[in-house]
Structures are given as C-alpha cells and as structure tokens.
Image (cartoon, rainbow, N blue to C red; front, side, top):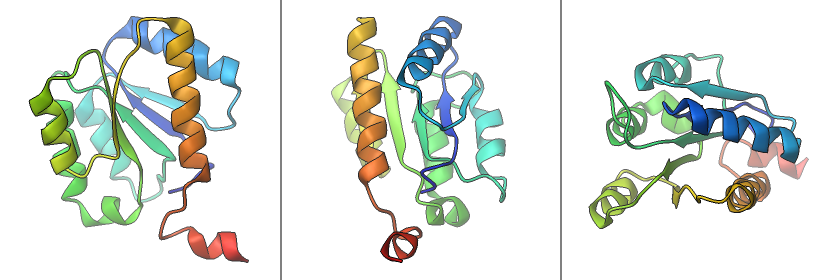
Length: 145
C-alpha cells in the first residue's frame, strides 16, 4: 500500500463524483483523486505496473463489470495482490448477500453511502485516516528505518 499514491474511486454516478470531489478538497489530503465511471477502464489502470494506488473505493452496481466481478479479477491477479491495495465497497445499499460475497472476496471494508454530506465526509475521513495508520507487508520495511 502506497500511502502517497492516488485514491481510486470507481463510481458511475456523476453526482456522487462531484460530491466526493468536494469532500476530498475540503479534507485536503495530498493524494491525487482519480475517478473511473467504467470498471474495465479502472481494471486497465490498476493492472499497469507503474500504478500503485493508496486505496480503491468501488461502487457495486456498475455497468459492464460490476464491483464484485471487478474485485474478483483484482483478487485473482497476483501482481495486484502483492501491491496490498485496500479495496473497499462504497454502495447506496447493502443486501446481506452482497456483504457476504464481498468479504468472501477478501474485501477490506463495506460501507453504505450516507445521505448526509457531513456524515459522508466523516466516513471518508475515518476511512482514509485508518488506512494512513495501517501497515502493509511491502511498506513496513520503510517505516522501521
């Protein structure tokens, strides 16, 4: 996990993209925010050897390749697994089966998008700050020096 890397948001709802853009501006993190409306484009980006994102926030209900299918492809890709990129679902609703399926694919978190701007901002802050404090296998060596 590259804590200085970009935050990748896979979200096809343009309104949600605008709201999240505003929230990330207000929170003033140094990470670049990269949006994808299409899961296949996100997969192409993530499989690039040069790319090492900080975290991925993904919607579940996406055209072409839904969030579960995308997570499966990422989880089955050894190079991507070795990057230790936290992958979290951020969805408007959560059916129990979706949550079970997500965690069976080694998802690192499942969040329901709050309807309140302030609550959404608070949730994003907690997510980012948690992962900023968390260690990952390929970066722990650097932290000990």
